[in-house]
Image (cartoon, rainbow over all chains, first blue to last red; front, side, top):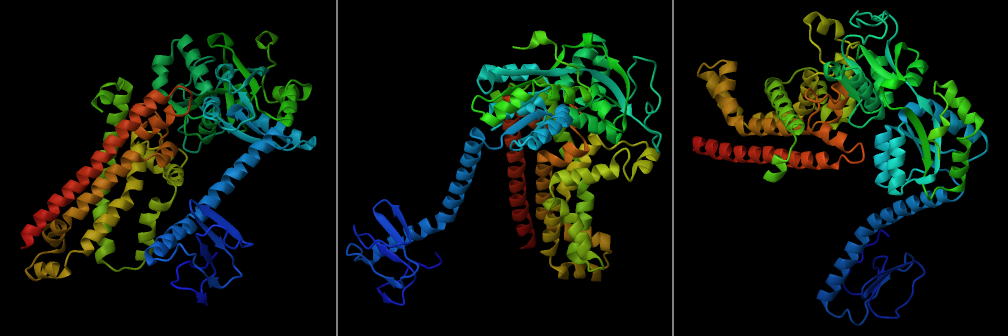
Length: 335
Length: 236
């Protein structure tokens, strides 16, 4: 479609195109684009330009050619949009049928989720696509229409929020397990000796001194649980301002691992699984509301996603969760 | 608009004030280096000029997250400069100073570009004349080059200020998002968009951002116009 449409008069030697406003003009084998009354046919093989009878005046020809050019210029953009839309629809359709589906998981479930997804693939099912993030962020994205089929949340309240909103199926909820909070430091000896608390902890049960990391208590579940615990210990007002809020539990773990903070309040599962992090002590479960991990599924999730959800209640998932430091769900919370 | 501003919570006012402070400090911090580098790139030929030019302008095209990460590797607790910072007793990463540094590095190329163009437009003959009359290099710069290049310099600084206000990626990577210390307007807006129900704060702060950045750009334009008119009259 390289040829220009503009050429006065007619005859051989014209560009690769044919313009006609006349109804019932020659139908070319190549493309046809209709735009209002004007229809443009592009025939790559035909080296001729003919104008219909209604195109007698030069002005009309000019304006037609201009609109034709505009149309041709817009074509790639339109085609791209259509292609993208087509792909998106295709992906959705695929997810709705038998194809790959998407799993959105709390960042603290990274290890478990990766393991479950890998096993699912080995089992011959299509590999799900995994998105990790703060449960609150993922909930927000689901609320805004993100095409996640399965949501694994570190806070049952976000699942409840989404089942209330209809983005998740209430009947599909599965209790995954329970988590605990620990106070942790980076292990190993620091070359610069700035990590006062590294290597040796303060008296048992006492928070270390200095800057610490946790999830942002404004939205990250880890931060909300930690704030509750410190409020219960009556230490929030004193220690809260020293906190470096991270965008997810994993990001908080990373800050402790990197040594950018002196200590952190982390999930036990995250701290135990990290090589460079040492747990000082656990924050009592009575200090905060129970940390219940819960999964649920979108109402339009496909068969494969449904089977994946069912597998979450099986012994393999339970084993994976317990090997990563989660405790079994207490039955009373389930539906 | 005013109703929106009055509806800001105390924490949001704090965010706004912090943003203005960080941006002003960043602009002040890049003013000196920006002038020097702009003048150097406009007036001097030296080995490695191309390299310096590239380095200065890199933050303009690099994703700010990379800028922030590189700064963290340099100024973090276990960074390259950690021993030096330790000796000075200065903490950069995850402090207000870090937020200022991130904003300054990202704003620097805009200031340098503006200064460089402005200096290049100054007739070297005028500087030569001043030299013949006995003015040293610094005096020539202060009394001839700088006044004539003033519109470009001011425009560059204003642009740098506006860019600092909008800085996000380098800031969150190097300085985190600590309320009252490093959580500037873009970070607070981002936080608001991260969870269901955060739209109120995000929208209010978005409006504030648009107004503030718009005002900075407008002010820059007005100052440039006034200075152009002023310098035009001076020359005739």
